[in-house]
Amino acid sequence: MFEGFTDETFEFFMAIQFNNNTEFFHSNHDWYVRAVREPCLQLAAALSEVMTDIDDEIELRPNRVVSRINRDLRFSRDKSPYRDYMWLRLRRPADPSRANLGFYFDISARESSFGMGFYEESKPHMNGFRRRMVTEPEAVLDLLRPLEDDFTLHMNAFKRMKRPEALHPELCDWYPVRSFWFVHDNADFSLLKSPALTDALADGYRRLAPLYKYVRDIPSESDEDVTKLLGGDAANR
Image 1: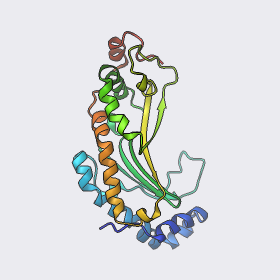
Image 2 (image 1 turned 180 degrees about the vertical axis):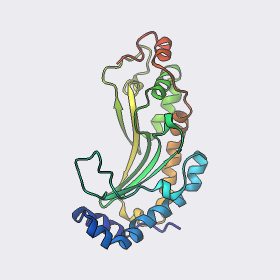
Image 3 (image 1 turned 90 degrees about the horizontal axis):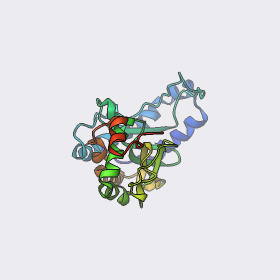
Image 4 (image 1 turned 90 degrees about the vertical axis):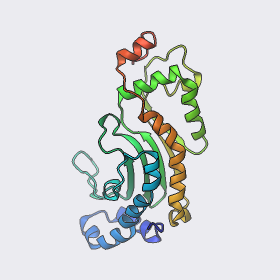
C-alpha cells in the first residue's frame, strides 16, 4: 500500500546528485530500494484502478511502469551512471503507432510533475488529429479548454506548415503539432509524503482522460488524405 514518499526519498535523490558513481550506489542500494523504488512500485500499483477505468489496455505491472535508475550511456555525453529522479510511465505496451501516447509521473529532490501527452512524432496520427481540428473544431476545443487552468501545454510543431483558411483561430498553434504534452508541476512535499498523492494523481488523470481517449482513437492518415480533404495545402511543411 502506498503511504507516501519520505524524507529519505528526497535525501537519496540529493545524495546521488553529488555521489553519482557505482561505489556509492552499491553501498547504498538498500537505501535506494527502501526509499525510492519500493514507494514508486507501490504508487504504480495504487494507480491501477483509475488507469484501468481510463484504458484497460494500459500496462499496469509495476515493474514495467516504474523506470530504472540506471542511465543508458550509449548515446549520451553525460556519463553519470544513475538518474537523480524516477518516473512512472503509463501507456499501452504494444501499439507502435501510438506507443508514445500515455500518462506519466516523475519525482526528484526538488519537485514532481505528472501529465499526459503524445511524446514523439507520429505524423500519420497527427494528420488524423489535424483533420478533426478542421472538421469538428468545437469538439477539439471542448477537450482542450478545460485543461488550461491546471496544466501547462508543451509542444513541438512544424515551423512551415500551412494552416487551412477555415481553421478555428484557437487551433492555429495546434494545427502543425508534431508532439505535445500537458504537465502539472507540484512542489508540495507534504502531498508527496502522503497517501493522498494517489487521489491527486487519479483526479488529474481523469481530467486528462477525455483528450487521451479522443487522440488514441483517431485513425491515422497519410499526407495525401489530409491534403485532399483540405484543399491541397494541409500537409505541406
